Amino acid sequence: MKKAWILCLAGVLLLAAACGTPAPANPPASEGGAPAQQVLRFGLDVDPETLDPRHARDVSALRVFELCGDGLIQLNEKLEALPSLAESWENPDELTWVFHLRQGVKFHDGSDLTAEDVKYTYDTIRDPAFGAVYAANYASIKEVVAEDDYTVRFDLNEPYSPILANNMELTIVPAEADSIADFAAKPIGTGPFIMMEWAKNEKILFEANPDYWGGSPALQRVEFYTIPSNDTRVSALEAGDVDFVHTPLTPQDVDRIKGDARFQVDELTGLGITFAAFNHNSPVLADRQTRVGLSHFLDKEVMARELSQGLELPGESILVPNTWFYSDEVKSFPYDPEQGKAILAEAGWTDTDGDGVLDKDGQKLTVRLSTYTQDDLKMQYVEYMQNLFAQGGVDARVVTNEWPTFIADVQAGNYDIAVFGMLNLFDPDKYMYSYLRSTAGSNWGGFSSTEFDALVEEARTVSGEAERRDLYVQAAAINNAEVMHNVLVYQGYVAMYNNKIQGYVPHARGSIRSFQNVSIAE
Image 1 (cartoon, rainbow, N blue to C red):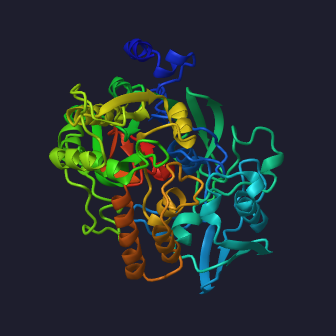
Image 2: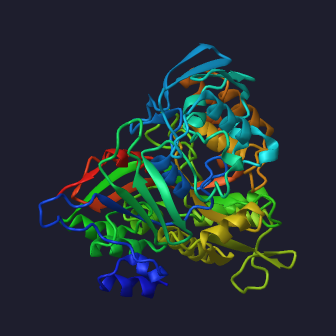
């Protein structure tokens, strides 16, 4: 596949020709002096699984919704809640939130947005029969009431401090969404761009919405092209076949593009982590001492400084730097192979037969290290971890698959140590409550701590940031001690794009919502 992309880049056809669908480049100005068409082509690393925002769980789908949909609010680059479909809101008491909708907003099919659409969106995502993956994120909502056409009230079961950040950016769908054929493949939203076509694993095409409530975009089209390989995606940028790429990227490519005057490179401290998820249901890793011993083999400094070449920072905990909840008090297990071997020996793992591999009761200390092939840097991390573990006497076997297979295996518990990441950690509730709480639907590794659960459940009900932070610091320390998600690195965020692009606002979340204000210079 990679060779096909490179051959394509050498020709005049665009990258989509590699998968059978040519895509036009930005055409030059016409002879009469008319401006060139405003088309922005975006290199996407992973194709979305679904385009129904209530079922979506991947970042690629989120990027689509930022173009073709809107939530009640939006978080800007400073993570401040700004009006979107809701012009204003109030919180009259700790169990009530009232949102006043913008009037005159239309869905892409021409129907009017009303409070009934908002109610429907939130009612369905919370309905157990609907089967939304992130339904637990909305558990604090008791009832959604359409008070009139443009007023919607949220009644809560309990105080829920992060409701704006965690719940109110949900893309609103029309109340008849589930009666629309193939809605998950061709969503209807209220956003600045209308989704026109989705050829799975190839491209997603958008056209400007001339009736957008925020004003028609300057861009006439936005075109997403799925290019799984990081280096091939950057090669497409250099060849002029795409205009914009962003994280994940390889350090070597970032350095090269920095030296090319045709492009702008933005580097930010991200809001994400890359972690090693330890499966507590794995026969070998069910023992805490074994998990701790293995953790001492992880050289995170090398991962961050050398493998990522400084794009990322060594990880300590699930508390992300440059956020209100960060604390440097929570430390990871230090890189200390000798201490790791000693702890494993205490757990009964020694080399009894002299073959260089630790064993216990006739069983080799064998672990599978898995990740997905679309991210070259995570592949490097896994291969490096394999080498570190081997030096410590661990039979580490690397298992890699494309993202859909990889995440399906993780969700099924078919892994030992899986390396992947979490983005958009602007509030810790979504991550800690949905992925690490004992009964969370996405707690695939079987981590269970009643103390941890109590801390994160209390943290979502208190209003003061200082009090919430203290609770999350305690919870993060428990996660580290029990080795559920061992954070390898804090992710950086890099966007690289043609310097003719004007109006783009870099965002640590990777948001491309500012494309609605982007234009392309002559």
